[in-house]
Length: 175
Image 1: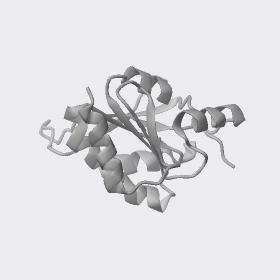
Image 2: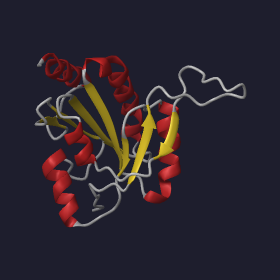
Image 3: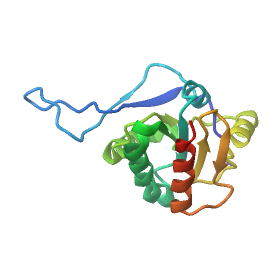
Image 4: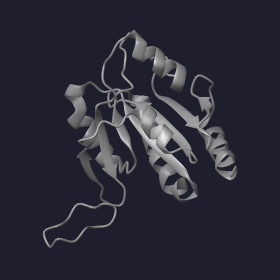
């Protein structure tokens, strides 16, 4: 079984609302600029930093067909609920060699929220991912955290998309 690190030294930062400039220097609507950040913020640090907001984390990979099919829903959740206090994040389990493919996918999907490329690691890091996020190796996998930072759901408990959306709405309604 492949194991993954929480460290994610290759944090993929996608700046929300930043467009790619055209030849005239104007930024067209609807485009997203992607840059690999020089910082090494971990997924755990990003979750802690966003305490007070509802957090949805999607674990995915470009080689996972169900992940690719479900990813646009995460982008829509972000667009619909960011103003209400929802923070969406994604954590790619693609190999480091496939980073460019993952970046291209994120750009194409307009993933204007924090995105992480998890790096291969050992059993200790794998255990942390399992304990904190419920990730037991299978993807697609999602975890939802309340405003208090408590995990309220992960994909080990099966829910339909509408049920997940309802849970997110319920958590957002809590102040």
